[in-house]
Image 1 (cartoon, one colour):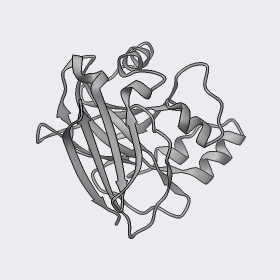
Image 2 (tube, one colour):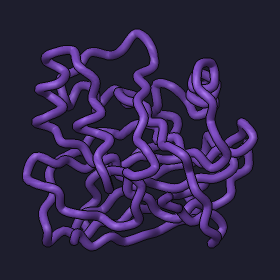
Image 3 (cartoon, one colour):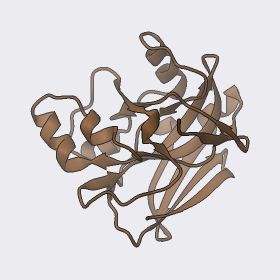
Image 4 (cartoon, helix red, strand yellow):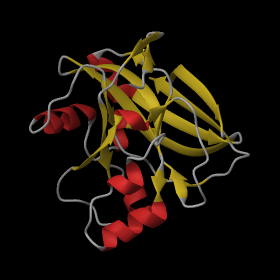
Length: 203
């Protein structure tokens, strides 16, 4: 089973639960409709990695504020990349078929380390993604259509979250393709204080 780092120790999420279409600007970017209810899909443990692989020319990055869950509570925060086969996803969407083939493949959930977070600090979290030192995506909890605790409650209304499962809260505008020469830097802030920074060289 693949692992992530929480407080510098290895923990094993059973799955990653992802929220789609949670930022209005990204919805408009892909010319989608604003959903009438929360869009939820899963990535398996086999998707989890701390390395960023070049998949192919159809693969897009989507950076996301991510939360770690234990005992039905949010206990940690990190950043992740939801890698997506955009061409395949568009084909599946056009046929009203599930997205998993385009979203849940091996190495499609790339994560930084996770750090502890207090309940009261959740609204203060923000994220930045730099590609080749250019600010490409940025997000705050305040810009989310569905906020983290609302997401947690909705997921648990029909699905059990195991200890150390991860919630990916959706991507802001700025998604796109990447190549083998790219360098990604993900940063997480708590009230403008940098708490996580990780660089990924595409391999």
